[in-house]
Length: 497
Image (tube, rainbow, N blue to C red; front, side, top):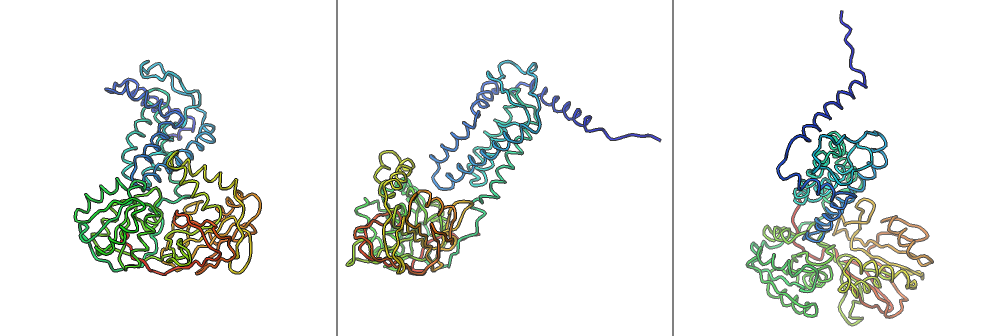
């Protein structure tokens, strides 16, 4: 009777290494046309993630929608998770030596050989993590990045610095890191569709009977206008300077069956007030630096709006209101689609708008935050009948929910409620604002409070106190009343499948 036994763990490892080495040797002995000039350089360019950081910057700059920026950010974040796992656990758990380079042609070899252990491949992990993270947010960008990531992973075997199993394990770890991050911070596609009460609106194929007003100085609006003209050849597209927008919007509202607007949140705010006054549906084409309202509706590109116009799909949304409006007690009410705020935020907006044309939007935002927190003093106001010092009063049109650890989109744009957040006066405004941001919605503490309200009353303000609404800044009198007009606005919006 035979007494065959299973191979021992050591024998399994030896067999695995022999097959791994055989695969490595086959790659080393095979000539790939053109690879000698490309793969070693590509491998070096991925050192320390530089290739992927550059790719993310290019995606954010060249991409025409928020989806591109989200894809770039998720790709970099996934890479960071994978790198942390590789460097803290992976390289320490299996201390495998690098392959011997005798069989690898000299022209393929890297000028500087890595000195860390071989298993798993950090380059393959970073490449796979970045590509997977990008693809989870944007399939089109994922299709662009994936071949480059595969080439980087292959280059590590081709240049002789890793065995094939090192690369396979690193790639698997990178993919896992991207999905693990998605478990903590969901992608936009994982989030539930926003609450959208359906509304009746005329279908306008090719833009017939639609007048679109474009703020020519708003973000990417001029480029978006060209796309609108191609996609909606029957629509009338009017480009206006910011000072001419009120007149252009009023004229457009009298001439069309629907009012279209292309610009940022401030431009859309003006159009929403006109559309609600005239009882017209609003077609929003994202074209500003920030497009919070459009994105919360699920509108990320011009073609999203075109689809809704063609089919006549629309929803009703709430319109925030404050009295008196920006023109004072004798003027009309003021409206907001996203948020109204008092305190440090209006000063931040004003400083950011001043510096953005000179140094760019993101650096201007950082500078504005620093200046606002350094030089501000808490304002004093009577809020809901109680006198108190405040660093910040934020009133959102609908509850702002979280996307992972950060405040994110609104789930319901017609909930009839205001998302009220207060940061109380005191020392260290920066720490107080950070605590409020971390705590999130519907929380209370001695530092801040977050509650839902249908109406907010402010009294005892110093005349001329700045406030912000949808990114615009104006100045108050002594009193303010903030409330909502439930489902007052109809907006074209693509319906979820």
